[in-house]
Length: 491
Image (cartoon, rainbow, N blue to C red):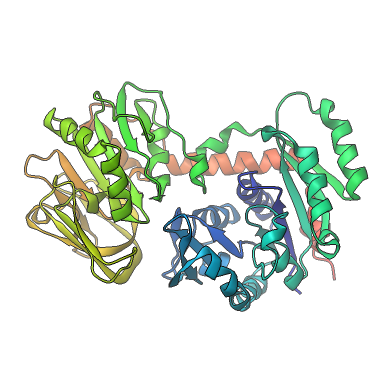
């Protein structure tokens, strides 16, 4: 029997991912073999696994919290939105199709087998599997064929704890209302509830906790205060994307509709010497920026269309004429070239479009997706780096003869303009490497604080675990999952 506990939410962005990460770290420190699991995720913020696949970034963080390497089985179904109505479908680490939201409803029952297979695989490795639901448990319009929330919990026989977010308001109605609208057999799987992100005197909400318990019959398992250091951990959803205003040197980042792998920005936000300015639609790229950074994109050509529609292409060219630097990461790198061609229709209808023309390179989208961890050094300074590649497309041209990076296997990566002001690379995670981040900040005339970004993530995870243990009945959670106090397994 797989010992497991599922954390579902009253809505999106109520803190499910971080609660699971904190519990994973807390229980791993007790000596349990913990594995995170999310049956179905929807995110363009993904991570490469050692077994050559991709999963949601949140599950990679949860694996780190549990002290294990990420695996494709931790997120067997990943949906990567490409439009308002369609997504790529990644199953056990590999892209299998692009479907509309309506057509996906017919796909879900077929995917349940892969979901349960991955869940069983993790169960064989672990003392405890912590399962994260997706979106809201009360989306009864999507209940038929569901594999993300109650459909999975029912199929796997997994007890559920429901998480509500008091910070957004209406938490009593959200929790009680969930029980009111879901199927009674689904509601019977919910054993307790947690209220997250409380601010102020917890005694003022004691009656609220009692009311929810009385109306639902569920156990009150914890009232979790707001955890400020959550900002130091990678966010899964673009809703969590934030800038910073701590330094005098500005890094401007146009926020495009299908921005991907935006945790590339997190290490920069933590630096006191720079301000990361997120440029939203309707805003101009600030003229005093030291660097314009074009991040990754799930639909590069469509996002390039949006960039032009916002007039940001004009702003970027003006920035470059003033001697400002421009850096493109992955999809942002592809946008900087002379042209982008998608002959196979990987991102939509086959077409070729002009790029921004700031690098003398051209990109052709190809069906083969590169997914791997990489390391090497930047050129010509020889500063080491470690990161990962996650992209489709081949890029070549005169500026690629001046690569930005040299990988450990000898391959060149990226391109640099003749004047050195514009550069692009396919490598994600550059700024998480303290050596590379310090080198880039020096080029911008800013000094790095000298801290270790990765050590900061570890400290935040440890703090999150302590925070949750102080405010949640973790022994009771273990008992609900079939484990005794302190992590001892029960028959």
